[in-house]
Length: 103
Image (cartoon, rainbow, N blue to C red; front, top):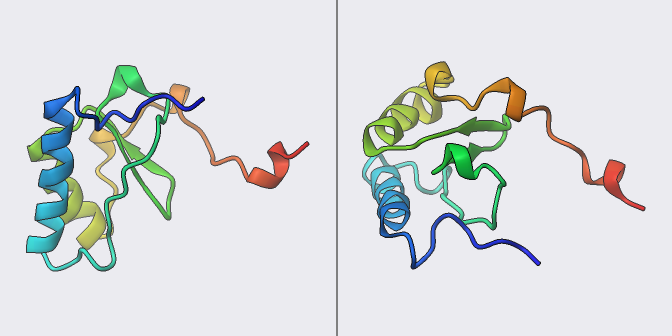
């Protein structure tokens, strides 16, 4: 059974960040190409709130409004990864293709 998402009714701070992200993407005019999608658990509770950007398999951790602004401007619009906000390599790796997990 999946765990609940970090963005839940029980966590107003994460709800606010998700709403802020969507609003900023709309204000910048890129919501059609960069859409926030609420997922189920990504198993990164100690680093949350997190955002995973695809393509690129880039995970940013410990989000704040200020970090979201910079990620939008520098990564999504500017094309440069904001390295100081990335999840540590020791707890994140290359994506695993679903075919390799199939039984």
